[in-house]
Length: 125
Image (cartoon, rainbow, N blue to C red; front, top):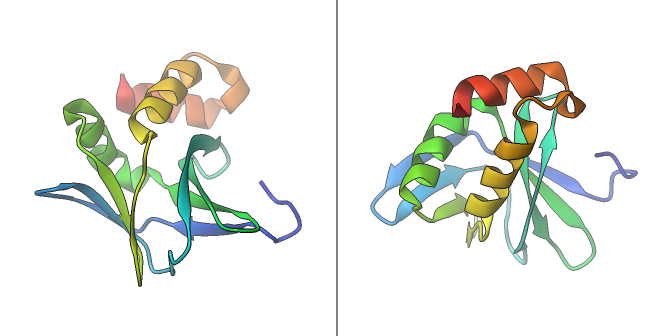
């Protein structure tokens, strides 16, 4: 996922169920970012990655295994999922479909790396 440093990574450090949905928190500025409705996986870090768009780059929102429990619950109840930063909140549009697609693809698929495949299969089975 390295393209010479132009694209930035944001790390989700916590996820909490609130009355309006699941709120994932990060420490960065989210000003001017928009949801791209697309996800990737970082097999090395064993994380799901949601893509946000800036005017001239993509921003990767890294969701480590520590927040998968809350993510799984929000997917099961189809609640909206938000990313809250220092200065803005963004709804992660399309995340339900994207994560479901990735989980389906990763299960029993060695292309994602053994560690990622085993973690996803164990967690989302």
